[in-house]
Amino acid sequence: MVEEKRNVRGINYLCLAICAFFGLGTEAIYFYWLEPMIYGSEAPDWNVGQSVIHWIITCITWGIITYFILRVSKRRYGFDIFRAGGKMKPWQWLCIALCIILSLSVSYMDWDGFKVVKEFQKNGWIKFIFQYIYYFVETALFTLILVYGQKACEKWFRKENIPYGGIILAATWGAAHFFTKGSITIGLLSMLSGMAYGLVYLLVNRDIRKAYPILAVMFIF
Image 1: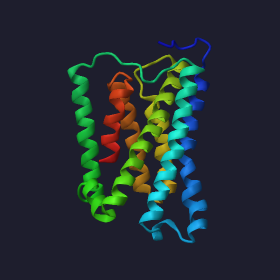
Image 2: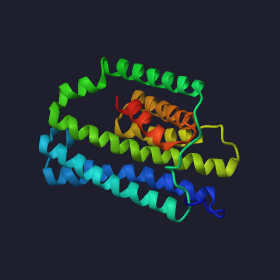
Image 3: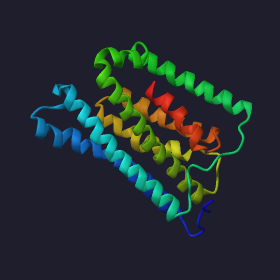
């Protein structure tokens, strides 16, 4: 097992979190500039094939960025985010269940129904499949913002019971929704979601193998 190196500082982990955030931002280059220039139309007017190509290219880009962030984390800093966390207590599982229920309830009210059903009805099965693959990859990358943001602040402040990662996620990925979605409501909900994700990460004892599927459910459904 690779052990964390002693000379690694909080700023090193924060840089990884920022890289993950800017990694997510690479989609904007495709979405707002490159693809409209190639297709001669904006995203709302893309056909099924163009939308699918967008999601494939974005997922490949995000996958490569994720790989290199994890590689640097493990090889240069000795921090393997896949290390198992401690055994969870019943109250932790209960809190996580409440977080999931609350998240799905908010999503249901926001979409006036189940998001999965609404998007399937809107997109059809081809676009639906590729869009949800895209969502799973996005979850992986914003989870890195959370994990490394949490690690950075724990290095600086020496306290491990505060969801720093959720705060950083809310201030980056969450706040970005004000601009990408053009909606104050969506922006605020995204920031609150980021905070909730940070809490879940602590509740699973920083075990990414438990955190990722839970965050995916909360974000995607």
